[in-house]
Length: 313
Image (cartoon, rainbow, N blue to C red):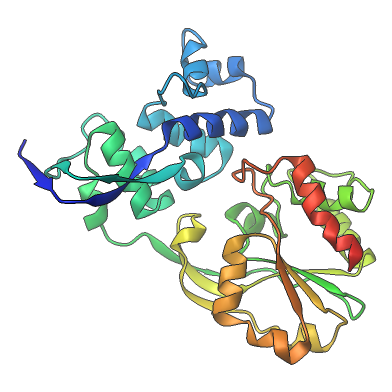
C-alpha cells in the first residue's frame, strides 16, 4: 500500500474519542437502557467492553459495525453519535484509497447516508480504512416535501419553528414525534402540565390530538422553515436545494409577534430565506436549544429553564 505526505500545515477532522465516549454514555442513559441490556443486544460475553466505550480514560470506541448498530438503535445519525474536532498537523500521512475489508456493506451504506463528509474522513483516519468508494458513488440525496400542515389559530402569539420533520415525525404525522425527542416533555413542563401520551403511543390519533390541543390552548403555533429540500439520510447538515414555506398567511391572520427556532439549523435557514418577514410583520426572533437527544449538553432541567422564556410572551 503506497503512502504519500501532505504538508506543510494541514487541518483535518478526527474523532474526539473522549467526548464521543461521554456522548455514548449520555445517549444510553437518556434512553434508560442498561449496560446489561446492551451487552445482550451485542451478544458480548462481558459488559466491560461497553464500560470501556463509555469511559473517556479508556480511549477506545466500538468497532465501526457496532457504532452503526448503536446509531440505528438510538435512531440518530452517525454525525449525532460521534463528536468530531479539527486537528492541525505540520505533516499528515495518508494511505491510497483501499476498500474497507471486513466491514459489512450495510454498515458502509448507513455511513454514506447518515454522515457528513468530514465525519467520514474522521472515521477513515480512526479505523484505518478508506471510504473512497463511498465518495464516488451516486448521491444518496432524496427530495423531502413537508407533509404536515402548520398548527395555529388566529389567537396564536408565538410560533415555534423547526427545520423539517424527522423521518419518525413524518411517519407518525406530527411534529417532534421521535420517541427520544424531549420537545413534548419540555413544553408541558414549562406550563406546569404533563401529557398523558408518549411519542410512541400506539394510539397515534389521540397523541396528536392531545398535542394540538396543548399548542392551541396556550396560543402557540408549530411549523417548520422549509417546504422542501434535498437531504442525505437524516442529517440536517447535508440539506441543500431548500425551498422555504410561505409564512404570509400565518403572520397576517394571527397575533404572532415572537418566533422561536428549535435549533440552530432552523435559525440559519430562516436568516437565509425568510428574514424579510421580521420587518414586515414586526417579529422578534430567538433561537432555543434543540430538544433532540443528540443535544447531549442540555439536560431536561436546562431545556425547561431555557424554554421558560415562552411564559413571558
